[in-house]
Length: 139
View (cartoon, rainbow, N blue to C red):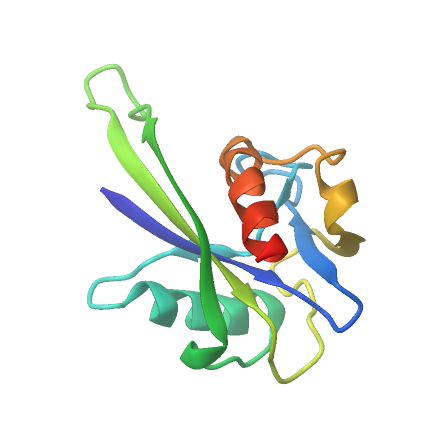
């Protein structure tokens, strides 16, 4: 199982931050929620805090993270002989952080209203997480 933690930064105006994947990467040009794979020994929240620092140059704390959705999917192996693996993404909302988000690993950042996110060309699993996120934001 490959475990991934992703985050949705929510600003004071209710906008969400999305990242556009840079050219030459998997799902290049598509929009995603920032985050990445958990490393050995990391908790899901710990992985997201590290990724937010590495990808966006911001600092957040574990209490500021709230689980907003989970999706699990099969991922094809890289060769015909490799078995399919499972991928699980945990999506957290982030309402407080320090620093100004910047796209440190390439791509672009975009703040948008929740109602407009569905119109973006989202990465496939982020698209699956969107209904859960929207429901979480209504609570």
